[in-house]
Amino acid sequence: MHRPEFIVPLAALALLGTKHAAGQGSVEAAIRERVTQYEAAYNAGDADAVAAVYTVDGTHTYALGFTHRGRLEIAKGLRELFAGPFKGTRIAITPLHIRVLSSDVALEEASFSLMGLKDASGTALPPVTGLCQGVYQQIGGQWFAAAVQCLVPPLAPR
Image 1: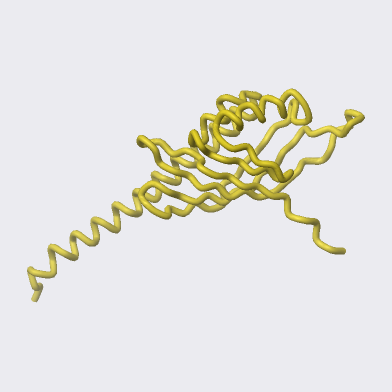
Image 2: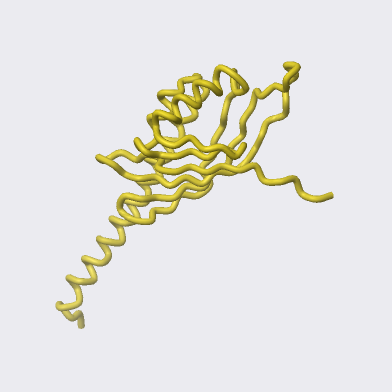
């Protein structure tokens, strides 16, 4: 025999679980779309469009060890990099894991490959590969990178 006092709460719980699962998927899709926007903007050499992926006060710590703080500094720094050592480079980013921490905060783990770097003599260098961790924040219904930190793992000892 079914006890009616349990049916409504159980049905509500099932709906909440479905909503959370659907919410997780939509957050993942939104963040993956942001990564795609970042890649396209980077590969077009569009520093302002790359910076637009970040919160106004967002930060990006590069694998080389320096940090740009704020959307304006990110754009300025990328313009300098695109005119200098990163001129003509391309990036490929693969989100590996996205985890929703709250209704407006998510964590993304990704791998990247930076291609097209050249040494001082102009000789092409092999791609640089590494990992990034990004904290995303939902603002006004859109997801923005609030903090991204990247690294290139050391070579394994021989």
